[in-house]
Figure 1 (spheres, rainbow, N blue to C red):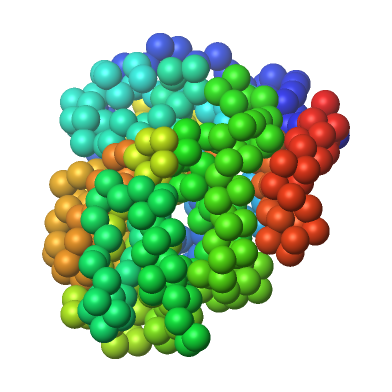
Figure 2: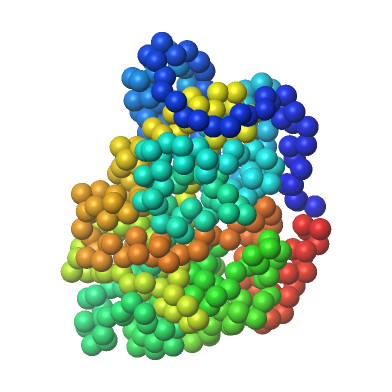
Length: 416
């Protein structure tokens, strides 16, 4: 059984009771120590250190110790967090990926932020800039636990040159699954596939979202074999059967798109730098919203800064939180060309996002209509069960209904 509910039972009993938050000013001689738990590579660590340096200009006598670790699984990250807490090094401020948010909430690791944000003018103004969709992913039962610092989503990119040569009209926002399939067939030749279907969990999610489906129901229980999920997977199998996509399991669809072996592919911002380096420009490609079956939608993931329940300096930790989600920090996070800023003013600023493709603002539009990537407390199990089922479907080993029925049964046995 891999259910993480209750991991913290007794682990944080030593933590002091947290009083009601009222963010106040600090004198330059304020002393203290804050512990930060971060994740990512050396670039993320550097950006956080620069934000800490700005914080220290205002609070020169406050020491901030950052621990930045790679994430191989969110359960391991949560366990690292628990270990730090039980050893007297509980983090005051934490960077948390969306996939681990519900797991952290279920283990009582995060402070609610609603009152903290409401009591701070700057944070209140910033919260108003976030898309409601982003805040939803870092909330539980209507309570906010994290302020996003970067995000990703999915749109459909298409090769304009290929469409022009084939005499096929460019796709437009609001197109349907049927129109998508017609377009993919029209663009498929002996040398080119109409679309590159990825088998990754995140990349598959827009197909559930636009069919009003999810691998987990709103109450948190698995729903892998719901009617709408089966319908979506059946549509994906049709792509394979019709030959409009290469093998979803073994194909590197982003390299294939760059080498003009695909007419369309789904992705976010993270591919743009490599495609530009490959010589793509506004004459070569553009993007459009995901095709719709039952409703418009897409998916988003990303990370947020949170406050830990074990902090003994909540007001000082809140002051540091403000620096971690300040526009300057968010701009630095986005500067690498991977992340989309989580606020509208930054995500639609072409000085930050660039001008390629022409419809780069479509990335922000996608976020505003997107669902958070499905990440209940048993995220690791649901991801593995679903991807095994998809491999069985794509290989022809099982039909969609049977594969998803088996995955649902497997998942229910794992989580109890």
